[in-house]
Image (cartoon, rainbow, N blue to C red):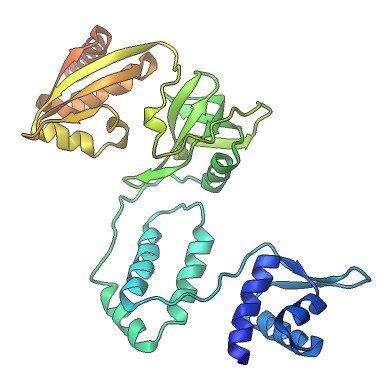
Amino acid sequence: MPKSKRLLELMMAVNRMRTFTVKELSQQFGVSTRTILRDLQELSELGVPLYSEVGPHGGYRILKERILPPIAFTEGEAFAIFFAIHGLRHYPDLPFEAEASSALAKFYQFMPQDIRDRIDQMRDRVDFVTPVRRTGSPHLAVLLDASMNQSVLRIDYESRNRISSRDIQPIGIYTHSGLWYCPAYCFQTGGNRVFRCDRMHGVTQSDMAPIDRRHIHLGNREKEHSAIGDTVQIKAELTRLGVQMCEAEPWTLSLLHVRENGTGWLEGESAKADLPFLASFMIRLDDEAVVASPPELLDAIRLKLSALMRKYEE
């Protein structure tokens, strides 16, 4: 077996085995232990994080970070991956910010010179612009880990000019218009809520026992009907422009219905606690929406409009 092929297969083998001895690798590849030691030294120089353990039961183990085997990309695939990562630079916070920057640097460094030249030319020709936000979301990595590990977090959350503590079990995180959001099960309200990550002033592990929600993820969370306290049924007619404005808001997608002519309506269940937010949203839609129900939402809209009138009359 050529040395280059053996090194590649050896890299994949140690990445898969995680712990191993020189003798085991020698038998597997049919070469001497001295040859395996030289190969391991070369892998270490290439960046494979190997750690040797001495003693009668010693050997080698690979550190926490796994090294992926080489992957061949076409020119178009290389452009797509580079600019997908490059576009993330507009976000002040990412759950894997350092890793994204490192991956981009490695990807660019090992490209052929002609591909790098084309990327340099394209940098000023393509971009993924997101609104610049002044607020930060420093807890993204913790929220993402909690969503994968089914753990409960205690957050200090700012809403309506006050900060309250609550226990949540995250479903995941997503970004929209430059802001990060975390859909989660809220133990205080007994149902799913969406929290803005930049409004979380503190995130710690909670003593609350988690519930089994492994089947819930970002793709199907809207279909789960969980008790969320007092709820109301909302319905509002939308013009074509009103539909387009709602399509720009991720939280409306489970309520939005569109007709063939482009008009539509909002219909579905909402928590009573969200009525002030819904009232502000409906006012923002202006003439592009007409609320039919519930009466509580109509009252909330009138109350906000009356407050605005008094403000400007004064």
